[in-house]
Image (cartoon, rainbow, N blue to C red):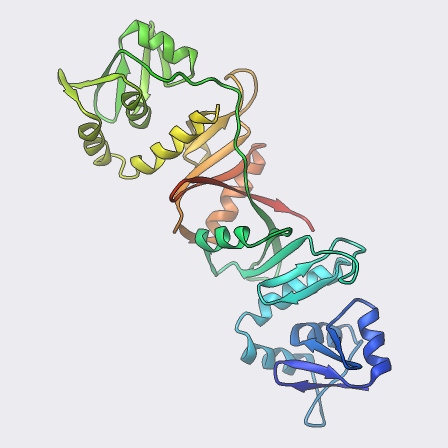
Length: 341
Protein backbone atom coordinates (compact mmCIF):
# COMPACT_ATOMS: atom_id res chain seq x y z
CA UNK A 1 0.00 0.00 0.00
CA UNK A 2 1.22 3.47 -0.82
CA UNK A 3 1.76 6.33 1.55
CA UNK A 4 -0.20 9.52 1.04
CA UNK A 5 0.99 13.11 1.35
CA UNK A 6 -0.88 14.84 4.17
CA UNK A 7 0.34 18.40 4.61
CA UNK A 8 3.99 18.26 5.68
CA UNK A 9 4.08 14.46 6.13
CA UNK A 10 3.45 11.15 4.39
CA UNK A 11 1.05 8.78 6.12
CA UNK A 12 1.05 5.02 5.61
CA UNK A 13 -2.42 3.86 6.64
CA UNK A 14 -2.15 0.08 6.27
CA UNK A 15 -1.03 -1.19 9.67
CA UNK A 16 1.05 -4.19 8.59
CA UNK A 17 2.94 -2.13 6.00
CA UNK A 18 3.38 0.70 8.48
CA UNK A 19 4.81 -1.66 11.11
CA UNK A 20 7.12 -3.25 8.56
CA UNK A 21 8.61 0.11 7.56
CA UNK A 22 8.93 1.31 11.14
CA UNK A 23 10.49 -1.87 12.50
CA UNK A 24 13.14 -1.98 9.79
CA UNK A 25 15.01 1.24 10.42
CA UNK A 26 12.67 3.08 12.84
CA UNK A 27 11.39 5.49 10.22
CA UNK A 28 8.62 7.87 11.30
CA UNK A 29 6.32 7.50 14.29
CA UNK A 30 3.44 5.07 14.80
CA UNK A 31 0.14 6.78 15.61
CA UNK A 32 -2.99 4.69 16.04
CA UNK A 33 -1.80 1.93 13.73
CA UNK A 34 -0.69 4.39 11.07
CA UNK A 35 2.86 5.49 10.27
CA UNK A 36 3.55 9.19 9.97
CA UNK A 37 6.74 9.92 8.02
CA UNK A 38 8.59 13.18 7.70
CA UNK A 39 8.88 14.18 4.04
CA UNK A 40 12.65 13.63 4.23
CA UNK A 41 12.16 10.09 5.51
CA UNK A 42 9.57 9.44 2.82
CA UNK A 43 11.90 10.72 0.09
CA UNK A 44 14.65 8.39 1.28
CA UNK A 45 12.31 5.40 1.33
CA UNK A 46 11.12 6.26 -2.17
CA UNK A 47 14.72 6.49 -3.36
CA UNK A 48 15.61 3.05 -1.95
CA UNK A 49 12.33 1.66 -3.36
CA UNK A 50 10.81 0.74 -0.02
CA UNK A 51 7.82 3.05 -0.38
CA UNK A 52 5.44 4.33 -3.03
CA UNK A 53 3.97 7.78 -2.35
CA UNK A 54 0.73 9.10 -3.81
CA UNK A 55 -0.90 12.50 -3.81
CA UNK A 56 -4.58 12.80 -4.67
CA UNK A 57 -4.48 9.27 -6.04
CA UNK A 58 -1.52 9.85 -8.33
CA UNK A 59 1.98 8.40 -7.82
CA UNK A 60 4.64 10.90 -6.82
CA UNK A 61 8.22 10.57 -8.10
CA UNK A 62 11.29 11.31 -5.98
CA UNK A 63 11.78 14.42 -8.12
CA UNK A 64 8.27 15.66 -7.38
CA UNK A 65 8.51 14.75 -3.70
CA UNK A 66 11.73 16.71 -3.27
CA UNK A 67 10.24 19.71 -5.05
CA UNK A 68 7.24 19.49 -2.74
CA UNK A 69 9.56 19.24 0.25
CA UNK A 70 11.22 22.52 -0.73
CA UNK A 71 7.86 24.28 -0.52
CA UNK A 72 7.62 23.12 3.10
CA UNK A 73 11.27 23.60 4.13
CA UNK A 74 13.78 25.78 2.26
CA UNK A 75 16.63 23.65 3.65
CA UNK A 76 14.99 20.39 2.56
CA UNK A 77 17.61 19.38 -0.01
CA UNK A 78 20.55 19.96 2.37
CA UNK A 79 18.90 18.12 5.24
CA UNK A 80 18.03 15.30 2.86
CA UNK A 81 21.65 14.92 1.73
CA UNK A 82 22.83 14.62 5.35
CA UNK A 83 19.96 12.32 6.38
CA UNK A 84 20.57 10.11 3.34
CA UNK A 85 24.30 9.88 4.02
CA UNK A 86 23.84 8.95 7.68
CA UNK A 87 21.21 6.33 6.84
CA UNK A 88 23.46 4.85 4.15
CA UNK A 89 26.20 4.60 6.78
CA UNK A 90 23.90 2.40 8.84
CA UNK A 91 22.81 4.89 11.48
CA UNK A 92 19.33 5.60 12.75
CA UNK A 93 18.71 9.31 12.25
CA UNK A 94 15.42 10.85 13.35
CA UNK A 95 14.06 14.23 12.37
CA UNK A 96 14.05 16.72 15.23
CA UNK A 97 12.83 20.35 15.16
CA UNK A 98 16.46 21.35 15.86
CA UNK A 99 18.08 19.07 13.28
CA UNK A 100 18.69 15.30 13.14
CA UNK A 101 18.94 13.10 16.21
CA UNK A 102 21.67 10.55 15.55
CA UNK A 103 21.66 7.32 17.54
CA UNK A 104 24.70 5.15 18.26
CA UNK A 105 25.43 2.49 15.67
CA UNK A 106 23.08 -0.40 16.40
CA UNK A 107 21.00 1.81 18.70
CA UNK A 108 17.26 2.41 18.48
CA UNK A 109 14.95 5.19 19.72
CA UNK A 110 13.14 2.86 22.14
CA UNK A 111 16.36 1.71 23.84
CA UNK A 112 18.97 4.44 23.40
CA UNK A 113 19.37 8.18 23.69
CA UNK A 114 20.68 10.10 20.67
CA UNK A 115 24.39 10.82 20.89
CA UNK A 116 24.51 13.71 18.42
CA UNK A 117 22.30 16.47 17.19
CA UNK A 118 23.29 16.94 13.56
CA UNK A 119 22.85 20.33 11.95
CA UNK A 120 22.61 20.12 8.14
CA UNK A 121 24.22 23.14 6.44
CA UNK A 122 25.19 24.29 2.98
CA UNK A 123 28.73 25.49 2.39
CA UNK A 124 27.08 28.71 1.19
CA UNK A 125 25.34 29.26 4.51
CA UNK A 126 27.12 31.72 6.80
CA UNK A 127 29.04 30.32 9.73
CA UNK A 128 27.57 31.88 12.87
CA UNK A 129 29.44 31.54 16.14
CA UNK A 130 26.39 32.75 18.06
CA UNK A 131 24.33 29.90 16.59
CA UNK A 132 27.04 27.33 17.39
CA UNK A 133 27.27 28.57 20.98
CA UNK A 134 23.52 28.38 21.42
CA UNK A 135 23.33 24.87 20.00
CA UNK A 136 26.16 23.62 22.23
CA UNK A 137 24.46 25.08 25.30
CA UNK A 138 21.19 23.38 24.37
CA UNK A 139 22.70 19.94 23.78
CA UNK A 140 22.01 18.40 27.21
CA UNK A 141 23.34 14.83 26.84
CA UNK A 142 23.89 15.10 23.08
CA UNK A 143 26.91 16.35 21.20
CA UNK A 144 26.80 18.78 18.29
CA UNK A 145 27.72 17.59 14.82
CA UNK A 146 27.68 19.93 11.83
CA UNK A 147 27.15 18.29 8.44
CA UNK A 148 28.19 20.67 5.67
CA UNK A 149 27.29 19.91 2.05
CA UNK A 150 29.49 21.43 -0.64
CA UNK A 151 28.26 22.48 -4.07
CA UNK A 152 28.84 18.96 -5.45
CA UNK A 153 26.91 17.31 -2.63
CA UNK A 154 29.95 15.93 -0.80
CA UNK A 155 29.64 16.11 2.97
CA UNK A 156 32.13 17.19 5.63
CA UNK A 157 31.28 16.65 9.27
CA UNK A 158 32.54 18.69 12.21
CA UNK A 159 32.27 18.03 15.93
CA UNK A 160 31.76 21.28 17.87
CA UNK A 161 32.17 21.47 21.64
CA UNK A 162 33.25 23.69 24.49
CA UNK A 163 36.90 22.90 25.17
CA UNK A 164 38.75 22.95 28.48
CA UNK A 165 42.10 24.70 28.07
CA UNK A 166 44.67 23.80 30.71
CA UNK A 167 48.46 23.98 30.89
CA UNK A 168 51.22 23.34 33.39
CA UNK A 169 53.03 26.70 33.56
CA UNK A 170 52.99 28.92 36.62
CA UNK A 171 52.41 32.55 35.76
CA UNK A 172 53.89 35.29 38.00
CA UNK A 173 51.48 37.74 39.59
CA UNK A 174 53.65 40.67 38.55
CA UNK A 175 56.51 41.73 36.27
CA UNK A 176 58.70 44.68 37.16
CA UNK A 177 61.10 46.52 34.93
CA UNK A 178 61.28 48.86 31.96
CA UNK A 179 60.05 48.31 28.39
CA UNK A 180 60.85 50.61 25.48
CA UNK A 181 58.10 51.05 22.88
CA UNK A 182 59.38 51.48 19.34
CA UNK A 183 56.90 51.38 16.44
CA UNK A 184 54.80 48.24 16.21
CA UNK A 185 56.80 46.34 18.84
CA UNK A 186 58.81 46.89 22.00
CA UNK A 187 62.27 46.04 23.32
CA UNK A 188 63.36 45.05 26.81
CA UNK A 189 66.90 46.27 27.48
CA UNK A 190 66.35 45.80 31.22
CA UNK A 191 68.40 42.62 31.84
CA UNK A 192 66.52 41.67 35.02
CA UNK A 193 63.11 41.84 33.33
CA UNK A 194 64.46 40.24 30.16
CA UNK A 195 65.71 37.24 32.12
CA UNK A 196 62.35 36.88 33.87
CA UNK A 197 60.53 37.02 30.52
CA UNK A 198 62.80 34.32 29.12
CA UNK A 199 62.02 32.10 32.10
CA UNK A 200 58.28 32.46 31.46
CA UNK A 201 58.35 32.40 27.65
CA UNK A 202 57.10 35.92 27.08
CA UNK A 203 58.50 37.63 24.00
CA UNK A 204 61.38 36.56 21.78
CA UNK A 205 65.08 36.44 22.58
CA UNK A 206 66.72 39.17 20.52
CA UNK A 207 70.21 38.14 21.60
CA UNK A 208 72.62 39.72 24.03
CA UNK A 209 70.19 39.47 26.93
CA UNK A 210 67.59 41.59 25.11
CA UNK A 211 63.95 40.59 24.53
CA UNK A 212 61.59 41.69 21.76
CA UNK A 213 57.86 42.00 22.52
CA UNK A 214 54.70 42.29 20.49
CA UNK A 215 52.27 45.11 21.27
CA UNK A 216 49.94 42.63 22.95
CA UNK A 217 52.68 41.20 25.14
CA UNK A 218 53.64 44.75 26.03
CA UNK A 219 50.07 45.53 27.11
CA UNK A 220 49.98 42.34 29.17
CA UNK A 221 53.19 43.22 31.00
CA UNK A 222 52.06 46.81 31.54
CA UNK A 223 48.97 45.47 33.32
CA UNK A 224 51.25 43.20 35.36
CA UNK A 225 53.31 46.09 36.71
CA UNK A 226 56.02 46.77 34.11
CA UNK A 227 56.71 50.32 32.91
CA UNK A 228 56.47 51.26 29.24
CA UNK A 229 58.28 54.30 27.83
CA UNK A 230 57.97 55.88 24.41
CA UNK A 231 60.43 58.60 23.48
CA UNK A 232 61.37 58.74 27.14
CA UNK A 233 57.77 59.33 28.27
CA UNK A 234 56.05 56.94 30.66
CA UNK A 235 52.74 55.62 29.28
CA UNK A 236 49.65 54.59 31.19
CA UNK A 237 47.80 51.47 30.09
CA UNK A 238 45.06 53.63 28.54
CA UNK A 239 47.61 55.68 26.61
CA UNK A 240 49.41 52.60 25.41
CA UNK A 241 46.20 50.86 24.25
CA UNK A 242 45.04 54.01 22.45
CA UNK A 243 48.34 54.00 20.56
CA UNK A 244 48.34 50.23 19.93
CA UNK A 245 44.79 50.26 18.58
CA UNK A 246 45.88 52.54 15.75
CA UNK A 247 48.18 49.71 14.62
CA UNK A 248 46.26 46.63 15.80
CA UNK A 249 42.55 47.52 16.12
CA UNK A 250 41.57 44.22 17.77
CA UNK A 251 44.30 44.30 20.42
CA UNK A 252 41.83 44.57 23.32
CA UNK A 253 40.01 41.39 22.28
CA UNK A 254 43.22 39.46 21.67
CA UNK A 255 44.60 40.70 24.99
CA UNK A 256 41.60 39.25 26.86
CA UNK A 257 42.27 35.83 25.34
CA UNK A 258 46.03 36.12 25.93
CA UNK A 259 45.47 36.97 29.60
CA UNK A 260 43.04 34.09 30.00
CA UNK A 261 45.35 31.57 28.34
CA UNK A 262 48.28 32.67 30.52
CA UNK A 263 46.06 32.41 33.59
CA UNK A 264 45.27 28.81 32.62
CA UNK A 265 48.94 27.83 32.64
CA UNK A 266 49.33 27.92 28.85
CA UNK A 267 51.96 29.62 26.71
CA UNK A 268 50.50 31.51 23.76
CA UNK A 269 52.83 32.56 20.95
CA UNK A 270 52.00 34.09 17.59
CA UNK A 271 50.13 31.82 15.20
CA UNK A 272 50.67 34.02 12.15
CA UNK A 273 52.45 31.27 10.18
CA UNK A 274 49.37 29.09 10.66
CA UNK A 275 46.79 31.75 9.84
CA UNK A 276 45.63 32.06 13.47
CA UNK A 277 46.20 34.51 16.28
CA UNK A 278 48.06 32.08 18.56
CA UNK A 279 49.78 28.77 18.66
CA UNK A 280 49.48 27.55 22.22
CA UNK A 281 51.76 25.29 24.27
CA UNK A 282 50.73 23.27 27.31
CA UNK A 283 54.31 22.70 28.45
CA UNK A 284 57.65 24.45 28.38
CA UNK A 285 58.81 25.49 24.93
CA UNK A 286 61.18 22.87 23.62
CA UNK A 287 59.41 20.08 25.54
CA UNK A 288 56.85 19.48 22.80
CA UNK A 289 54.98 21.06 19.93
CA UNK A 290 52.06 23.45 20.32
CA UNK A 291 48.92 21.27 20.31
CA UNK A 292 46.49 24.15 19.69
CA UNK A 293 45.85 26.90 17.21
CA UNK A 294 43.66 29.56 18.81
CA UNK A 295 41.80 32.20 16.86
CA UNK A 296 40.15 35.00 18.84
CA UNK A 297 36.67 36.08 17.74
CA UNK A 298 33.73 37.99 19.24
CA UNK A 299 30.61 36.05 20.19
CA UNK A 300 28.77 37.58 17.21
CA UNK A 301 31.46 36.38 14.78
CA UNK A 302 30.34 35.29 11.32
CA UNK A 303 32.38 33.87 8.48
CA UNK A 304 32.11 31.60 5.46
CA UNK A 305 32.34 27.84 5.72
CA UNK A 306 35.21 28.00 3.24
CA UNK A 307 37.27 29.96 5.79
CA UNK A 308 36.29 27.62 8.61
CA UNK A 309 37.13 24.56 6.53
CA UNK A 310 40.53 26.02 5.65
CA UNK A 311 41.35 26.75 9.30
CA UNK A 312 40.36 23.30 10.57
CA UNK A 313 42.12 21.53 7.69
CA UNK A 314 45.33 23.51 8.24
CA UNK A 315 45.31 22.80 11.98
CA UNK A 316 44.86 19.10 11.31
CA UNK A 317 47.67 19.07 8.72
CA UNK A 318 50.16 20.38 11.31
CA UNK A 319 48.90 18.06 14.09
CA UNK A 320 47.07 20.75 16.02
CA UNK A 321 43.53 21.31 17.18
CA UNK A 322 41.56 24.32 15.96
CA UNK A 323 40.19 26.30 18.89
CA UNK A 324 38.16 29.50 18.75
CA UNK A 325 38.51 31.78 21.77
CA UNK A 326 35.14 33.52 21.93
CA UNK A 327 35.18 36.81 23.81
CA UNK A 328 31.74 37.59 25.17
CA UNK A 329 30.96 38.23 28.82
CA UNK A 330 33.77 35.76 29.47
CA UNK A 331 36.28 33.92 27.30
CA UNK A 332 34.91 30.58 26.09
CA UNK A 333 36.77 28.06 23.97
CA UNK A 334 35.09 26.18 21.13
CA UNK A 335 36.84 23.35 19.35
CA UNK A 336 35.91 22.45 15.78
CA UNK A 337 37.20 19.08 14.64
CA UNK A 338 36.62 17.17 11.44
CA UNK A 339 35.08 13.77 12.02
CA UNK A 340 33.78 10.74 10.16
CA UNK A 341 30.48 9.43 11.50
